[in-house]
Each structure stands twice: as structure tokens, then as C-alpha cells.
Amino acid sequence: MSPSARVRLLVIAVLAAVEAPLVFTAAVKAGDLFSLCKRNDPQLNECVKDSITALRATFKKGIPELRVPSLDPMVVPQISLNQGNGPVSITSSFKDLHIQGFSDVQINSVKVDLPNYRIDVDCHLPWFYTWGDYDIKGQILVLPISGNGPSWSNYTDVRGRAAITGRELVKKNKTYFGMEDMKFDVDVGHATIHMDNLFNGNKVLGDTMNQFMSDNWRAVYSELKPVINEAVSTLLRDVAKKIFDKFPLEELFPK
Image (tube, rainbow, N blue to C red; front, side):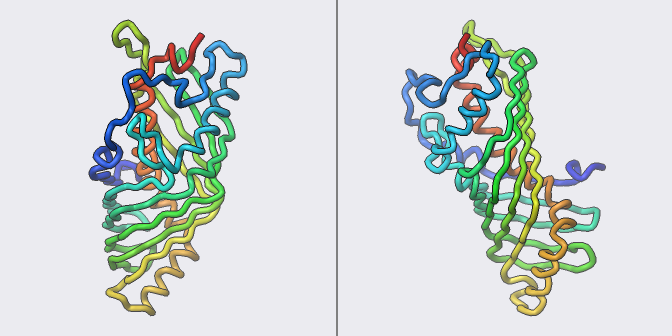
């Protein structure tokens, strides 16, 4: 069984968290929110890249017209992980997990394939930072771990690759990008993971484990990567779907 299949990720109430009160009127147009790109533009990929880059200014406030909350920080009400095999064997949960830093995203490249309903995005983040409450029990590499309380993690030199796939969807004689999935893959140049109150507050054991995780961050991150990928994918998937469900392709990519 693959690591991603072993991971049990439960994002509880994410949809409720992003379903903020609806404040836009039915007359809102895609051009009111985004810089539009013509589908036959020979520089379509560069145009979409610039359009996404321009959206960074809205990340902190979100897009209330589409019921999209702040993306910086993004907030996951709860994540649960049951990683039963491999070097990292833990049962853990995180509540009110905040993910901060997406306003500084740099879009490296975009590839738009409208006939095949696929969009690929390659991006880079100088850093992103997470914090929230944790509960954990299990083993990391050769050491047991247990505890609950506040935690934080810092990731630098982050590269992300998103693949958005879909199909043709016709509604009321208009064609939409019927989004089927969005996969986000995250690699990091360095990670620091810290948990307070490990081992019932035993400072010596807690400091030892935190130092151990920092010293062996590559092995720890390798095992936790599927969780981070799915957490980010879940949140950004919802944002992309709101856009594609709201606006037909004729409006998003005019001729």
C-alpha cells in the first residue's frame, strides 16, 4: 500500500469554514475579479501566470464575492493522521491549523490546455509557517513520541506543483470547466517542526525530541508530506472549483 493510501486525512468542517456569507450579486463578472486572458492568445500561458500573480493582493482578504475566505493564513479546522507503517508511525490530529505565507507565492510557470481541460502550475514560496494545537502518539524513526498542546512548523525554499484536471460541462447552453480534481505536490528545502508539552511537559524529553525532529527533518517530512499535500490540495481545490463553477469558459477565457 502506498504512503498516500495509508494516510487517513480527515478535514473536518472545511467546507463550513469556507462557506462565508454570500455577498456578491448575480451580476458579478469574471472580469470584475480577475485579469482575463483570451484563449487564442499565443502568450496564453504567460497571461494566466500574470493573472494569478496579480491575485496575490487578494489572498489576505479572500474573495468574498465567491465565498472564499482568507488564504493567508489558510485555516484547517481539523486534520487527523493515522500513519501506521514506515519510519514514522503515529496517530495525530491538529486543530485550528493555520498555514501562512501564500501571499508571497511566486508563479514560475503555467501551462493551460483547454481542449483537454488541464492546467498545470509551478510555483515557489520563500517560506510558509504553520501553527495550531496538536495531539500525537507513536514513533518517529527510533524514538517514541507522545503529547498534546501548541505546535508550529517553519518551511523554507518551498516548491509547489499543482495539476488541475477536469472535463467539459455544459449548463444552460454554456460550457464550463468541470473540475474533477486538483493535486498539489509540495517539496521543501528545509523544515523545522516544534511541539510544546511533549511527554506530559517533560522538558528534557521534549527538547530532545524537538531537536531530533529538526536534525532529521528530511525523514520526518518525507513521511508527513502526503498530509501536507492533501491539506493544501483540499483548500485550494475548493477555491478553484468555486471559480470554475461560477464562470463559464466563454467568460473566463474569451475568444
